[in-house]
Length: 427
Image (tube, rainbow, N blue to C red; front, side, top):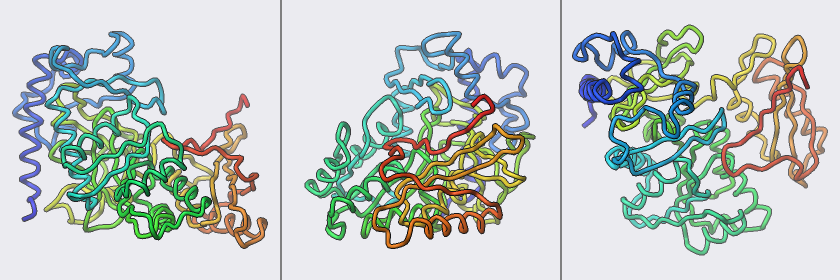
């Protein structure tokens, strides 16, 4: 039976009020920020935006600089925290994050939803194709899989060829990695002559960057991994595992609203947006209370599925994470998101890798693309280059120059990709 929307919001309100009472009592970071708010019993899951301030990454970072090493966003005594992680630092200085055992288990339950929605069942063997550093996501995924009693195979400290061998030798049926690395690993398999028809992988769960809910990127991954189905997911070290793949609607991520209250705002005016409009995702962690975040501006651009679909289910994000608010560029009046450019380029299987240059050194911002073509693609390089330019022009109604790079000259990425480069006036 589907959970009715009022039931979801009633549960959220109960958890929100419990969180607010806890932080007002013992969390010095939020004690000062929440002075002057109405009585807690007047705040609920649908009106919190009227009463509670935003929290930003810069504020958390500044708090940790002033109060090293962990800052003051701690609701429990320090000796009750048993987990340490930190952000990747891809958008600034890394932020340290602590969790209690109770909060940790809540996040594992969220990851179990990802596995269930992705079709992972008893008897599966999950291969984790990444190194285990202080970033949160790998640890929660691994431990959630362990609690589901599936075989967990770590792939840290291995190169791509060795990981592929481990997948085949151990008959792994599920692969966890970033979308970029799924493409890279599949390309290495093809270049090595591996028979992917014999590959045991049947489910690929991707996270860490946009793309898994983009049709062209998902299809590119599935074309490299014969018989496998791609499932998207996203989360952040600061908030935990947030979404799981919608089993009923392709290219859609659902927010685990038992653990989060989600808002979508205009990143410039900070006003709420309607379903179907693209804006910034704002999250309140109603189940992760030891180091909570209230109305946290994630910087992720999303678009809620329009219509009345979510009166009886959790909020859905059409196309998953569309990009970062600070990554969007405006070229001659056209809004360009990195995920949209990648969606066009991934429609060309001949492209091994690419880079995008955003030139802000001129009076008007310009964008250009460099692509690396697979050897023996069957088309002349110039003809292919022109077809890529045409596809970009047709999609964006904008001329985007495309140039060719030498084979193996562009960088490859195992973790979050860094394909976009800004050229500033000083350069």
